[in-house]
Structure formats: C-alpha cells, structure tokens
Image (tube, rainbow, N blue to C red; front, side):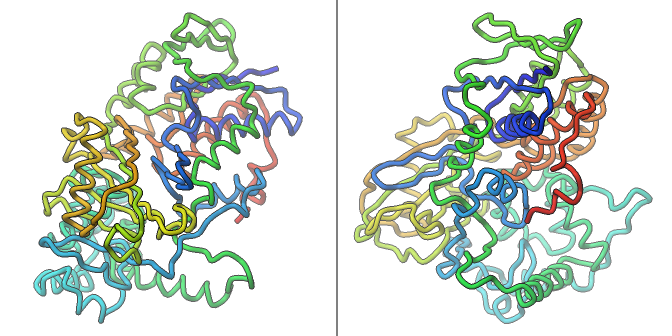
Length: 491
C-alpha cells in the first residue's frame, strides 16, 4: 500500500486527497493522510451562515468557462447545486473622479467592443477614448523565436490602450480581483491570452470583438435547454463556496484528515519520506504533496532542495481582507440593482472594490435584507491590515457611505483576514515555476500544489492538486481512466 501525506487542507490539498481516494476506488493500492495547521478545512474558501445570510469570506465564485469545478461537482453529485449570477440585475460601477460610472456595455476586460456605449460613457475623457481607439492601428509587438516576449500588465495596457485605460479600467479590475500591482504583474503568467490576442488579431479591440462574436455564435448554435440554469460568466453554489470543499472532504474521507496539526519539516528517508508535525509526531509515507502557500512551502522544502526553495522565495504575496455587512433593505438607502463597484487606485480610497452579494447571488440574504462585501488591503495598502477587525468594519462602512451613499446601520459585520493570501505573479514568475517543476521532478514522491504557481482561481487550484497526485501516481506506474483526453471532456 502506497501512502501519500498531503500538507495543507485548502482547495488544492482537498483536490489532491479526493483524487487519491478516487485512485483507491479504482483499485490502486494507495491511501492518503492530510494534515492542516488551522482548525478547519477549506483554506481561503470559507462560508459562514448567520441568521439566514450566506457569507463567503474568500472566493465567492469561479469562472464558468473553466471546467474543473463542474467536473468535480458532477463526480460529487452536487452539479445541480451550482448557482449562476442574477444577470437580470447585472451592472458594475467604476469610481472615476469621485463619481460612479457604469462599466460600458461591450467592454471585455480592458477593451471596448461596442462603439456607442463606449463613445457616450463619462468614465473616460475624449483624449482617453481616442487613445484607446488607437489600439486598432498600433502594430503588434514582434514575437521572438520562442513567442511573444513577456512584459508587465502596465506596460502592455499603456502601450496598446494608453495610461487612462490602465488607471480607470485595467488597474481597478486586476486590483479588485487579483489584489495585484499592474506595474509588477507578469502578463504571460496572469493574462497570456492577451499576448496571444495581440499576435493573432493585431490588438485587443479586434481580438475581443472576435471573441464576443464567437460567444454569440455559440449561444445561437447551442441555446440553453428549456428549464436549464443560465450559463453566466461566474458561478457559485447555492450554499456558498464552502459547500464544495465540504463535499470534497466528505467524499475523500474526513477520517484521514487532521486539523490543528502543522507540518514543521519534511525529509527524504531510506524508503519514502518523513513529515514531522509541531507536536513531535513523525509520519512516514511514500510521497509528500505540499499544498500550501509558496512562502510556507519554502520553509519545508529548503532542507530538501535549496534550488526549489529559492524559486519559492521569489514569489511575493500580499495580504487583504473582506468585510461583509448586512442591512435591512429598507434602511440601506441605495439602488441594489448592481453587482458592485471598483475603486481605482487613482481615487485614493481605502476600498478596492465592493460586491452587492445579495444581488449578484440569489439567496445570499433573507427577504427584506441585503448583504454587501468590501475589499481592503492589496499591494498598495498593506498598512491597513494592522487595524483591528472592528476598525476595518468601520473603514469599509465609511467607504460604502461615501462611495455608494449607503445609509442605515448594519445589522452585523463579518471580517475575514487573508494574511499573505494572494500570490503575486511578478515578472519572471513562469521561470520560477518551471524551476520548481523541473527540480521537483527529480525528487520521486515529492510534488507541490496550490494557487502560487499556475493560476489563483479555484479551478486552477483544483487542477494543481490533481496534477500533483498524477505526478506521484505516475512514478508508481498507476494511471486513472479519468486522466485520458477523452475522459477530460466533462463539460
């Protein structure tokens, strides 16, 4: 019987555990033990239920186009519990020069694909609009023999669309979603599609216009079945995202998972590996999967391979917090027909973004009540993380009052802190990841997983955990039918 120790009980670690369990069900002689330093499983996926409210503290959704979560949901039997956004109320504000502006219809990421909404918006000045339109005429940056050269997101957007597009659109979008600094973000690691789009179409406007046409054609060709849930850009679960991680833990086997147990060291042994926990326990296994943040993995890996550890140490992280506030609908005093607001760095606000949670996701609040969620922190405001929970709630409430006009007093506030929780894919990130993967391949029974490497989204983390399992199973000559190309076409 081959034994796998999984360090970390977040979504990547749980995905690894669930895949090992599936391998065992398929008849392979393999089992796992999972250890998690916190007192709960799920990592940054955390859902709290308070007086009928469903409150996600970390990720509240995943990209619908990425199939990993749909595939897992079907395996778990919870696919019908997936929840699309309420797109009948879809509207996004961007704060610009102290005023709220609608994100113009047809804007895809950072590029307009519809003329009239873009021409009439007050979000950009006319010089800014003309500069963005110049993307249609700017030639693509020549690609080298190995493909287009990497550059920062800031460099790319300013080169193609101008500084105003960066400040008023690109920066708040990536700041609110990735909690990252565009001046340091590797485009190849975060948005490789943009590099490909420039080469294939000559620019972003042409590329996204073609993408919009393709989506429209697919919708006409494959209309939703009568009674089927709509397919929206983002998807969640009716009971929140922790419903997914709870189901994964249940299916994999909670009896093989230990919480409140931190791994302090890993070391190769004469046969396999030894993992030592903070209580002195020594666990022996044939393989170890380190499914933690890279900064935590670096401390464990350094005695094993300094080259891997140095690459891990090169991955920066930023801290952030979410603050959810519940209100009586009659007291909140704003039109709730919107998904949220983005606050550019240029506005000098403490608030990076806010989500109208109970609008975006049906069922997040009881009838007659609403739920708002604010985001603070990020690479440009790490100092705010030193504030108390009570003070963070006061800051977010004050920002919502000034930015959105929120009135009334909240019924309660719930603060979630994510210390060094968001990896920063800075320039050179893909090279660091390649070093980690190449050197890990030389260590039989060792694999790393998580959002620090090839994608921060929930589907990316699931795939990362599964790839780690495939690595160690492959070393033992074990294969799963689900890994065949045919079986991967689940959704």
